[in-house]
Image 1 (tube, rainbow, N blue to C red):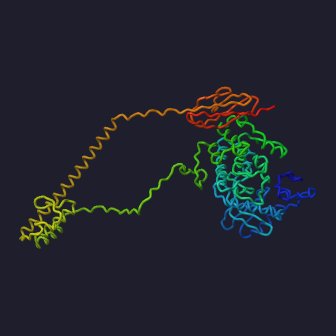
Image 2 (cartoon, rainbow, N blue to C red):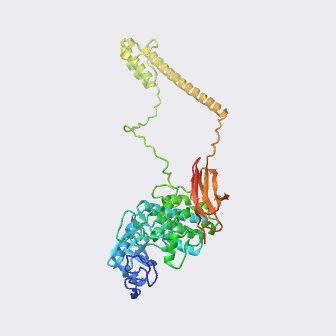
Image 3 (cartoon, rainbow, N blue to C red):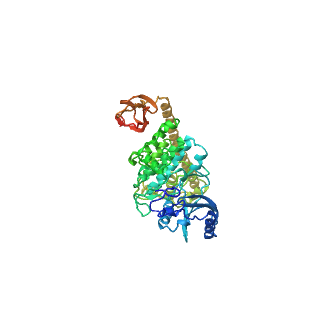
Length: 543
């Protein structure tokens, strides 16, 4: 439905044109008086006084006017979108406008413009969002063309942002160059979820049969007024990609109903014919996304993004900023091993240096004065302290010194014997300690020597050679129904149709069928090991 005065698309449930304000129920009424930008700025400034300083109007569209302002509290620039006051009395439009803000505020993604506040004051309904200091894709395309790498990056980031929205049951429904922004870092930012719709809800503002969107970028199901899902956004983004690559829209005409007819019934021109340097996989991905039926497109936006940039890794994590490295692929599982109880780690103290000196000799002398049992207790304590075995007089091990006859027999010793015993005990203890340390050092040395020998033997041995993996093959068979064509696989000419059991490596391949009188047929196919991919194709040929 279009306005009789300005020919602008108008939602079927609206009583007034969003561009000129004409009363659609009275075709002879003419455009309504639209409040001038200066007057609207004055009213908005008065309403937001003390909170925001309104600078100027930076844009005006079907869902309202956008003003640049300064947040006085946080000292940052913001964009304020205001519903035109002349149509604010239309409850349906006000409801849709507020729904725009609520829908966009639910989304949190680095490639989606965030919403800061949603408010109303009298007949002024507005929300505050981040101000993107950059250009829209529409402005960029008007000033020049983009490189293929820039086009792929733009499509990839926009697809990832839309995938984030789709997983939260939100469809944009109005993807076009004017709603794709580039910030000062060149990052893609999606704007204006004003006519988006929650896929699992149905409200009075977006009813079945109602056509909302921009005709040049509208999906066939959206043009028919049918219910849409995320694959409708995929079609619209593919139209944008077609325009970026070829410099033109796939369907062009002066009449809106003719454009809609072409979206529903006609096939788009071949991208590779219009732009030969476009990679075959990019063209194949866009043609697949431009399929008339949603089931013929990619199931998700992530798969579309992967087809446009196969070398770019996709992860399902949130909050991945632009230009940053993404986290590990979700295909790598994290294994968690349960434990039966807490694990306690006790820090190990470094062994102190053990010395037998004068203080030890004095203590041992005091023990010896009390009797022989004191001496043996001291000796056993010293042996245990140095990690040496406790033994009896004959060299056999003693489990309990208290059960030993030596420990039970008191001995009377004079002062000379005390000194000799102290000196002898100190010498014996030091000798035993030195021997134990030497034995440990010899053991470590032997282990190191043996390890070095093993390493040298391993280095001199020739590593076993593994046989190279054998290539795995499949086959492709294609035929053209009622016509003929030349088959290209991965841009290599194979032969004319029919192509029967042509052997190829297993994996993904781009198949293209050409006929001078027809449009090319292109598809990306997966060939399984020891299996044949078969297809019967109908070419779209002119009269």
